[in-house]
Length: 281
Image (cartoon, rainbow, N blue to C red):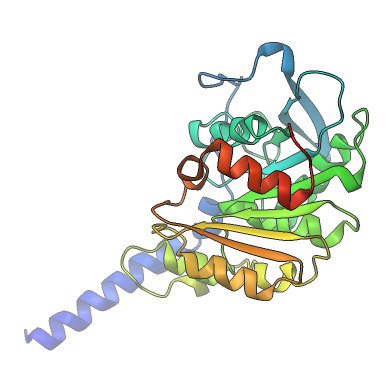
């Protein structure tokens, strides 16, 4: 057998493997780590300032945690949409919520359908967006919380529901996207270690650049220049598609999940408070 024929057979075999797994690509992206009960990592938020909450979305019950600042002074509330693969109690996602609380905000972190304790199944970007809207609706039932004092914040996969929430909810205070992707194809291809164009295997287009163009609230894009999962150029694409007022912050040395840590509470907190006009904590 010639080398060229061997190469052709190998390529066909690889394609067959990819095709066999393709039907699962959406399932992998929209599947989370299920739990019977939340066991939160070591936390900096006192028990008195956090509580488990629940609300409904599409007939399913979603669970989350509400982190409140001490005292009675009104604070802006961040609705935090987390990334794929984990749940709100995963170390990365819980640390994200804690970090935003340490920056001086009230934070509602929640699990999509099929993630954590939440029932149902996340089928596509539509169900993610519905869950984000349900989280916002719950946040608005809290004392002193109105749309104009709510920030939509999304990390990684969470950039999709966070952007859609801001695009479809007039009057939100701001949109913050951390380590976000430009569209589903770009996300799938950048996450593929073999460099094979597998984006077409993903049913969901997840056109974040198109959706962010409809956001009227101020937009802040945060991305690490050492992000190997979603390259920083996709953050730049989101920035270019957004309307003014907008700001792009590329963080030197930060990876996909370490933008907050590299920036630090003081720097990130000051940036978020200035950008959202939140005032001192």
